[in-house]
Every structure is written in C-alpha cells, then in structure tokens.
Length: 270
Image (cartoon, rainbow, N blue to C red):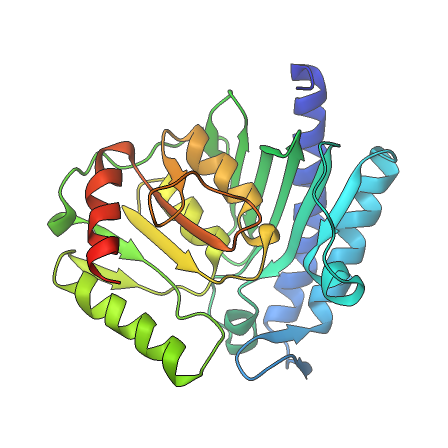
C-alpha cells in the first residue's frame, strides 16, 4: 500500500481531473445532445470521450507509471486485465441516459486500485455540485464533510436502489421485474436513479439503505464508489452474500446491520 502522502496526492489529482471533466459535463448538460447510439438504452455521447481523454491525460502527466482502465478505452480496445499495479479505473460519465434527458443524476467516477484493492475514490456530480471522496482507511466525505451509512436495521423501513440494466430481452426483463416485485413487498420503496456510482454514494451518505445491481457495465462503475461506501462504514458484497469481486459485474451494498437480511431477501427473490 502507498504511504499517506502519496494517497493524498493521488486523491487531490483525481479531484482536479473530476472537476475539469465536470465542467465539460455541466456545459454539455444544458445543450442539445448529439448522440451516437450504443444499443437502445446505453447512450454514448461526445462528452463521454472528451472527458475520458481529459481525465487520463491529467492522471498520466502526474503518474506516468500507473495503469489505466476506462469505459471508452475498454470498449475500443477490448477488456483490460486488472493487475496489482496502481490502476486508475474511470467512468468519465456515469448516467449517460440521464445526461441525454437532462436528468441531474450524472457523475464522473475515478477510482484507483492498488494490489487490486480499491484504494482511492472520487465521484463528482457536477450538476448538483456534490463531490464524494474516500481514501482506504481514512474515511469518506461529501464536499469535505464526513459521511456515514444509515443505521437502519429493518428491511421494511429501508429505501432500496437498483437499476433495470441495459438488456431488453424478455428473459432478463422477467427476472429483473420478478425480483423487484418480490423485494417491493419487503422494503419501504425502490429507486432507479440511473447511476451505479451515485447509488453507491447514496448508500455511503445514508440517503439509501440498500443497493444491488446485476450486469452493470464494468469495474469503472463501482471502483470509486466501493472505496466511499467502505470508508463510510458500509459493506460491499456479491448479491449472493459472497465476497465482492470487482470484475464480476454484480454488486450489493448496505450498512452492516442490513447485510444478512438483505442477502436473504435477494435469495428469496430469485
């Protein structure tokens, strides 16, 4: 693990990159969108590409020996293997559908893994001007103030977030809606805000009590958020209850009090 000075520098540089990218997103958000279609639901915009270039260039200038995995680069160059080297894992614009519709849940997600462990996380929503940050072992913050997960211990009083995912085939839709039907009777209500990274941050600051998503895009959706949830006292795990795997495209998160009962509810919803 890197020393605290290095980690502080990694975080500060990532925050700079996120703020710069955030400005581009904010400008694009209020303009007409030119959309390049990547499947019916998963929309990619020119803003996405501009932001990823900007973020990677900023990080490469400062940390030339680090490795990089990004949503756009991976889409273009095939999957990138995650190694033990310090690796920046970036989603330049999480919530692209929201972006296209002018729905204000969009963010930049910048995470750093060291030895495959998410270690530094920055998630910035430039429309609502909310900056979530976390460093392994040093707490999580929203706009510089410490945050922590909710203390809710009852499923029936919990607010659950999930996402519908991008696939629209009947089998996937049935599995998704059946699961939601089953869970709706056990929790207070359900939200689909359209951003995996912001859902994780919602868990971290106690706005949400429960979150799960199956089949999200890739590690760039979760790396930063995982650090922030864990540093806020939350737990991140596989929806089956097994250990979280950063490469598996399956995630669940909550406060520690809800984990067992949530996993049980998810099992019953299968």
